[in-house]
Image (tube, rainbow, N blue to C red; front, side, top):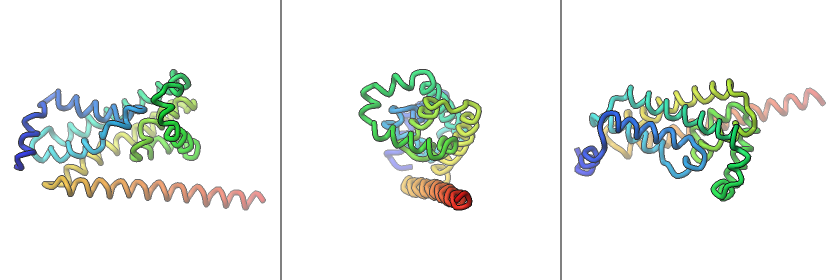
Length: 205
């Protein structure tokens, strides 16, 4: 084992404390503004890599990160429901005004599906559930989209690190490829609805 990796393994806590850190990473990345400064996805991929070095089990890692991601989305959603209009006036939200507007447009264009896709789209990951709550999205559909996306994220990102094997560089490459796949799925969805809208408009004319 490389010396730097051996030193890192010695620094990291064991057992419940280690799992708590992973849970908090997944949770924090799903919250508005805080998620912008937490590289949770990258660290969770790395945690999957560390499973091969004997740090935690893959099953526990998946359960903990899925739970953190789902509860983070719920937290962001309910903050939007109860405090959304007030929080938008805060300096941190005003500073990222364009990002908030981008998340709003994304939610308006894609509705509930935006909760699923935003999970894999970095900057708007934590803001989109907040916008959904602020916009009055019904909670039951939100829960469904949030749960499905959290499960997929909780399986794929640790899995990417795990399947990356013995090379962290390889794990990063797989992460990029996975992100491109999600981007292609999103693009296909946009094109599908654009074509559907044009077809519907032509039939009504």
